[in-house]
Length: 235
View 1: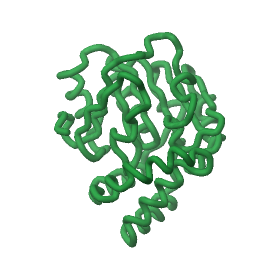
View 2: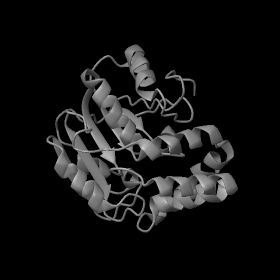
View 3: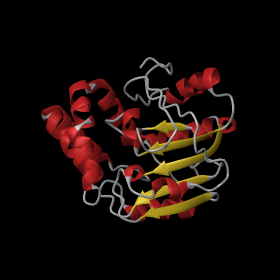
């Protein structure tokens, strides 16, 4: 299983989501050349086809990887994705990041959990958020925003393998209706609304049960999250 995080996060955001699944992290996620680095990483570690779970920015990368390396992917799960982020919205985040990086990221993290996943947000704020704010890599954050300004999903760009789109019904970052319409465009796509789920829907109650299909979803597998710049596990 490959777990691809969203913007301004890393593989630690998935800790505790899948029992028996561990994460191998390689640093801040840098989209440029990511598919090639991930393929090289998997060549050394996981020769068989995998399930790729991508959240938000990671969803665009998951779809891209599955298109470019179809033989490596058994199934793709896209969580909290959009068809495309409006250019002006991305520019506004970039301006906010430049003016007040801590305030920008803190506000974004709150949006990932509001309005319905408040207990999960409190746990995140009291633990992982401090590490993210302390360790933020401005270059990686800007590269991620640059990628989001250009990335787009459609029925034509969704991969040919089975795709499950999971979306929180309370998501305030990525509109629910947009994800639902995108799912209808794909020929091999199922749509899974998650009642009560916010943007970080993979942390909502019922996520794992919702996407389990009995067709190879691992209950105790080794997950590898190759979110870094060189595809090698160094942390």
